[in-house]
View 1 (cartoon, rainbow, N blue to C red):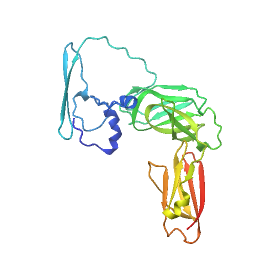
View 2 (view 1 turned 120 degrees about the vertical axis):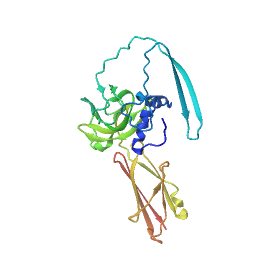
View 3 (view 1 turned 30 degrees about the horizontal axis):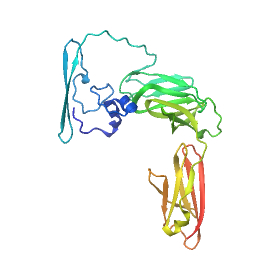
View 4 (view 1 turned 180 degrees about the horizontal axis):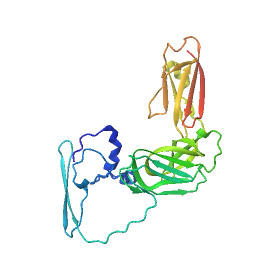
Length: 300
């Protein structure tokens, strides 16, 4: 096989080229020596999709040759000893999901919908849940092991306690193995929350975000001298989804580096009336619809 180039639309299919479970759980990168049936990457040059039939009691000599784009090569050889073994028993599977089909799993408080074209291989799906006093729902583990999806699947989780008047403040969070959670969001539907996910093997629950963003002006006494306004913006859970600044009712453009919480506006005399009091209004909204407004008047 020769990995030169491939379609951008198939970038996520590299998750089938590697051992996705090893990558997700141990951050180790291993290339698979076989091709999964849903993997249509074109750079393979394979016989029998890379599968080897060990059907004799003899030595099978394997040889890997790797070469990078600069022509550097590495050869690795090893021996597989063929031995007669009893056929392993296959565990029964209640929720088998063929890679060729549109697959769904439905329970009274949980639903998973995987459209066709998302799986690279068939697998046995598992779903487990545990009660929670922290979240608005049970905690749902969507499959025991990591499984990559080519595009998206939809998850719906029922609320155990639907107590918020503003349904936009609900959101699904992904819970890590250490107990931390990351806001994903979603849409309120049928007394629950629905959201898209891009892989299986994670834990999810419904949480809420009722706190508005935090706006902190940075050295406002120096804004006029430096001819720029700087504001630090943060949110405790769902993240900033929108922000807007105006001076004297006119829109002003705040620049923002995605890696920083700092928002900056550089003075534009066409927007400012010299010799008058200027009124800045800065409004920020988070992913749950909570809004904060900051006002500041200064002479220019």
